[in-house]
Length: 492
Image 1 (spheres, rainbow, N blue to C red):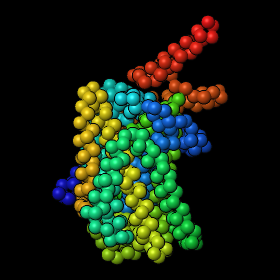
Image 2: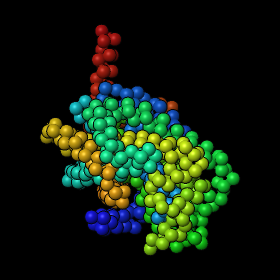
Image 3: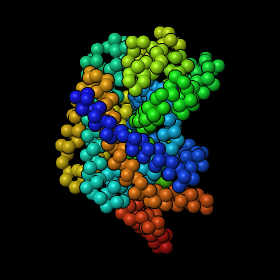
Image 4: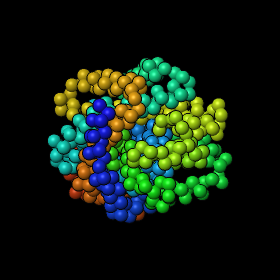
């Protein structure tokens, strides 16, 4: 089975996908004049803008739901794996994916807002919606929806659950079967509560867990600040093949940096538009900018914290293409959360190991919850014309089963299957946002024009020539009717 999974991954994660991810991010960055830099203050302001409604969540809740998906085991175990197979230089390429990917995150999340719908009283949107409405390709939309349900409902939860089981076994010697039972109960409680419960859970847990992890990592870095310049130079040398020890794996540094970067921050993968579409905002570009900043939080902050800790302590391994050891700093520990636990324990005896296990539990569990919401949204897309309520019940049972199975199976199999899911979604979504890029660029230009006039940006798709943005057209008509009725009452 492992051989089959690896063979599929070798096709999906060919150099073509690596170049596509970096190339599209660079193109979007140039076309938007590097909005990820120009609009940085606006991104931060918009995070706390807006309020939740009966149909949607606030911008901050949407951000938290997205970060629940972005900040997961990829920020801990994923970084360790990238360094093992790509060397320290892989961290640099993760940064590049984050910087360029922020523009891709803007495009996909803005499109999610433009073409969202209200289904059963809740905002729903994502790639399946904008593929059907923006491109008029319903068959393609169904392919994405089915692939996403398969990836987020079956393949990806196992990666997160496996890391939880492994870290709790290392820190507390808890049997993975016991961990699986606990995860099943907690996950069932959350997902059977609906979108609002998911949003409240994410907004309460995600900021706390991410900030706490970054603070502890910063303490470790501060205690070893003298080593930081050397570590930064090592990363740069390794990223471009200048380091004698790691120069032979330059190609692997790029491949693993991009692969784990996409897995971690999910920019361009098509997951973020699902949560961003649930936000109640006055203009699609608002959520686009908020989601662009979420990529920075994930990779530039959390992943960097993990990478610096590992490199400063030296407790990591690097393997060549043939499996030979290029560097051995932690013998007998498989690539994954064990690296980070050992590194932190070496700096904070009696605390580090346990802290990483707890942090990873929250990181990975909230990501599983986010995966459920993404799969649920695609079920809602398929089900909106048919309306079979049992579809959702089946999804809940399947994702709980996948989580339980992933907790106790081998890590190699879990990561391999997860990579298949990420790769499939990335291929399908990146092609779609390339074809729909002009719509997102039009939204950005409209947002900036209204801002320049000093007015609160409002979205009018008819004025911009954007078709099939039905929710926004209906919203504008409803607002106009309210204004007309108000004027008539005043005149009367």
